[in-house]
Image 1 (spheres, one colour):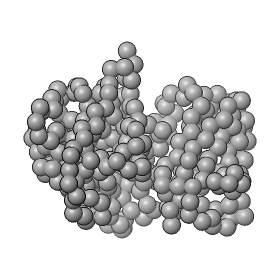
Image 2 (cartoon, one colour):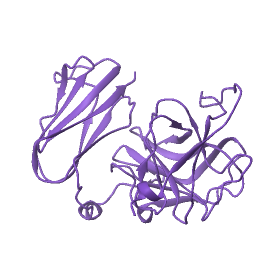
Image 3 (tube, helix red, strand yellow):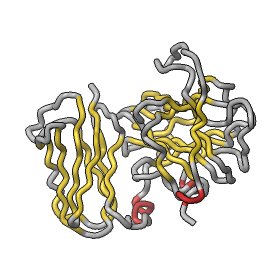
Length: 292
C-alpha cells in the first residue's frame, strides 16, 4: 500500500481572535496545527531550512500545541535531496521535547549543526501511537494560511515522505549561530560513499530550495537516465535570464546554484522567476521568488 493511501494530513483549524506579534514578527496564534490522523512509531514532520554561508543551526523554534505528551525527539539530516532521507540516516540532537502549551517553544542543540550543501532537514518525531484529544489543542506544529515559504513533509514509516500542501506555512524555524574557529560543529555533509549508495531516481524531477530565496537558490535535478538537458531561468514576461547549459548529464541527482544574476553576471531584481528543465522529451518548471 502506498504512503498516499495510508497517510493523510489533518490540518486542525482553530477559531482565533487577533493575536499579538512575537519575536519572529509573525502572529503568535496559528490558524491551526498540522497533525496526522494515525500515528506509528515512525511518524515524523520535517522542514527544509536554508543555512546561510558562515553560519550553523544552533537550535529550533516552533509554535507548539499541547504540552503533553510532547515530541519524542528532534533530528537533523542533510538537505541535498528532493525529499528528506530515511529516519535511520538522520542524527538525533534533542530528546524528550518539553514544548510550551499553545505558544512558541525554543530549544538549543548541544552542538551546532553545519552543512556545506546550504540546507538541512529539521525533523520532529511524534511519540509512538499518539492519539489527538477530542478537546483542546493537539500535539503538533502550528501553521498559517499563507503561501508556503518552506518545504515541509510528513512520513508514517520513516522512509517514504510526502510533501505538505503549499497553501500553509509551518510555524517552525531554525536558530542560527555564527561559525568561528572554536565552534564545534556536527557536520551533516554526506560522504562520497553515501552519495554512491543513493538509488537512481525513477522519474524526472525538478526542485528549488530555499524558496523564496536571498541571495541564492539551489536548483536540483533528478534524472532517471543519461540524457541531454536544458536548464534555463526565465522572468515573468518569459524572457531568458540565465542559461546553465548543462549539456549531457548522467543519471542521478545534480545541483545548480543560481545567485540571482543573468548571463552577463548582472544582478536581477526581486520578483518571480521560473526554472525550466527539458530532458528526455519532457519539460518541467518551478516557480521561484527572489526577495531583496
